[in-house]
Image (cartoon, rainbow, N blue to C red; front, side, top):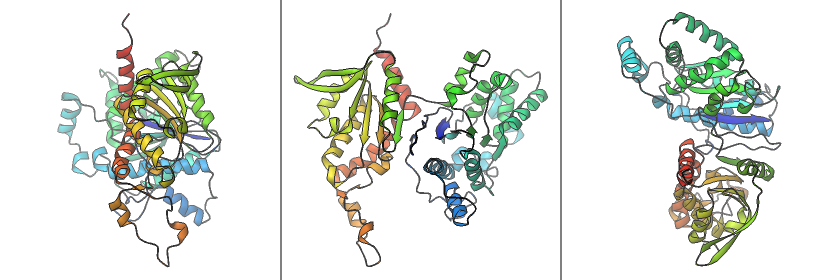
Length: 445
């Protein structure tokens, strides 16, 4: 469960990854949650603000680092979010080596792991950072790891070559067991739930064991943070019997859900749309949606439709139109979702309806947007929320006021549902349900 980020840099979140594709401008894939506010406490219980983004800013102020580029800052926000999630889920992840839930005795360790085996996949997804030489991957991961120390967390930062040497040494020690890799996976997870691997790469020897080893590691709750010069699809390229290694790549990425953030990245969305439709030619289509009404689809092929945001949400369309659309199409590529406020309240209503219909029909969404789901809807508030917003004072400038604040109870109450659904629609579990739905619709041979 990984997320992927590219330091052109790119990001992947662990065992099953939604990738962040490289672009020349700041953009990255969102998976599961919006960016953190960086307000977590330190792993040792200190209430001060902590994390890699905070440490990065401290070093810039101290003159230890130059101000980074947008790609590094985007990746740092993902690392900060991961840090915040780990702080919040430390008990569930069994990160603290001294907590009761993480203290294995010899007897219950044997019973739980061998007599009554069970999967304990981490509730927090890790990260896979890839990019070219000199993009700062190792430095950013080290900032993240340092932020997790000093603490009682079971965490390890190790170069990939040294990690593999350790694995081979452990395998020699357990030679003769039915599945020595399972025992090695248990040992590694017992020592380090948070595993930071630098310079991830694959050679012939590593390819033979990585698929099974990491299956055991992920099933035992490992949270992986890795850096690499190569995107997941390029790992072990042209290697011997690479087809045997492909399941490992599939375990690193869930490649069908995309939520891209940034301006001027429509080309990236069109590229992903073209990858989905393959060789089938895409062109305009007309579909009947409700009571004889017809809807013009600008670009469509193989069950996938491409729309500009304005074409679906700035026109007089409603739930019935959207339901008719998704009777014909299972995937929507939506370009240019804006931040919502008073100026586009009506479009916000339609967007909320569109998301609801897509969620209920298990449709797949690819989109470009001006912000994360939380950021898109942050200016939509209920009356009660608006009453809690402090009025302007002499120390609070007009510039800091949100002049586009939209006070709307119906939209405000739908806000959390829409954020949750947008996040879930890019999750591994949702995309698996989407795939199952497509398989069930295919006529049996």
